Figure 1 (cartoon, protein in one colour):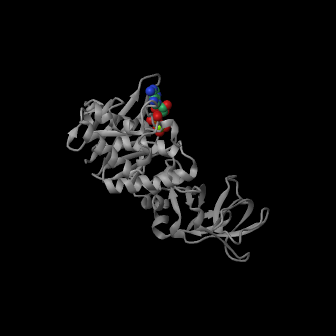
Figure 2 (spheres, helix red, strand yellow):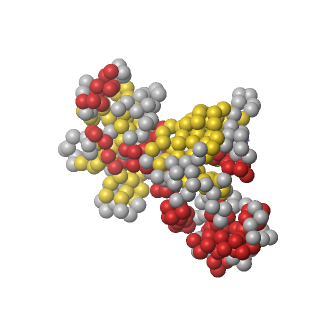
Figure 3 (spheres, protein in one colour):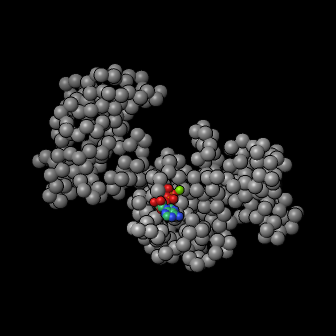
Length: 365
Ligand code: ADP
Ligand code: MG
């Protein structure tokens, strides 16, 4: 087991212009932690993981595993095990042979290999399949064999790059819970890459959000949701996404669709201090609520209703607003408004609003 550290680590792919796929990454992962790297496609997640695995050059900065600077250490010497999206199982080998192959290369005896493989197979519920070839396994079973191959090596760190993306939705949910439970049990430091923010939020002790090779924020799922550092993280974390819109600043707050929303004193102070006439206002879908027609609020023309069972998502536009972006609110699933209706909507609690700089997107308070 070990902690892991990226120290101003960059990977710059040559070209014109060169691509800073990972740009000055500073990130420390605790011993035993499950850290998720999340971000859109092309944000540098795989590159960051591969730098730690030794499969990618570190052009600037350093990477550490435990107390060892491994920046120049070849992959074999890093004591890591990696699970890829394509499980890369050997088709001509059985499950047991696939799982034990790395140990055989290490020169361990047959008896020791058999013991480790049996133990991993038990953890992964693969005992019945040890003699099968990969082609006779389901997608979920192959995924578990790939996990088993990493586990038998008992590495200091697990690195996983989108290991669930080949599974169907239901199996993915099941497997993500199993991987999280397995990691808790083994206590092995794990860095897990995904583009799926739900996967990130449900699995990670902490989640590091990347965009264009730059770390945006690294925090617990709760903190990312409640206090995103910038508008990008605000929009990326949470489903459906936070409503983000450029909003006029008034004397005592902001105005949405003609509805003045007074801001808490500290928020207002941050806005006035910056001399802003507009801010990017962030409102979570559950922070909006339908109210009676006479109550203070703004009118929303309902353009789409997604009924999810327990709740429903209502998408609509503000008739008196220049911004054509639809607002989304989460309402009780049993009483959704009708398509085409106009409903009155209010902000539940101004404390739940998020304010970001209109240009930089940085959180104001
Ligand atoms: P992610 O895993 O988040 O989708 P990657 O780490 O694969 O992102 O890629 C990050 C950026 O680096 C992308 O812009 C990608 O096009 C670029 N990139 C990745 N691999 C190479 C390579 N071998 N040569 C040049 N550019 C690359
Ligand atoms: Mg990738």
